[in-house]
Length: 345
Ligand code: PLP
Ligand code: COI
Image (cartoon, rainbow, N blue to C red; front, side, top):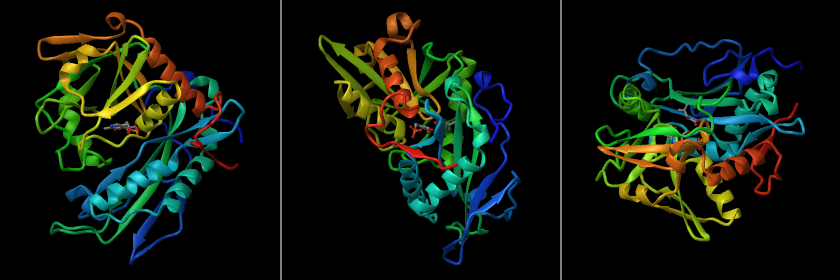
């Protein structure tokens, strides 16, 4: 199949039309067979629970071309497991893991011509979505669900690349509650955080870093990525990343904790106090879209914490973690943890 004619090296993080999407519906207790369609529209009842009561969950994943020309999806079973966990929290019907992986694999296979060339640095972003499509006016779960997967080729989430970003520490707006649904990819979490991000952008910051919603004492996560700090005191280097009930269980962070251990770093996954920012030589955020992005500074009230030699260039550990993760994803480095799921032709 000939590759689509796109300017791969200059793609942004946006929606580029592709050929097909894959859909399943759950009705009368069973999931349908996959429906492959070119239509990008959905016809659903105006009283669908997704629209009124937020029964909506999504995933963010990626497919890449490896250096040896294969197309792989990164750790799809982790995202499928997270979506099922989210579905159970929101009283939605979880797509079985095999169905989730099938839908993702098919969506990539059918749109293979949109998988960017390996050397471009772009990827095929995969967006699985689960919504309550059954109508209901009283508050309660739907009796019908739609699970669909679409894909779009994307370039970097932050146009600054490996140049460190500027971060606003947000204490006033919470994206999630301590015992809420911040740990899963509920659509409403993103609506809740939008005004904080808009405010940060107005002030000249790239991204928001939320504090914990219970005490405003600990670091939670960014609007669409996980925070980490690097503490190097002598030979002992630590990768420190927050643990909290209100932050997303990130597949990328789990992968980076693993490669950090492989590289000999000590990993601390625990509550991280705001004041600990002063003890990090490097800081960054990570996620499917953001990969590993260095943070140059964090503004907390009147106080600015800076990292990476005054925030101008990425420090060595951010680079190493980036290279290791992307190296495994593109098969430049052996897939020693079995993270790559190959998409058949
Ligand atoms: N936190 C939030 C709020 C996100 O939206 C994302 C992106 O998916 C992440 C963290 C990173 O998670 P993952 O590594 O699973 O993509
Ligand atoms: C991801 O990294 O997959 C995300 O979900 C970020 C995003 C909401 C665009």
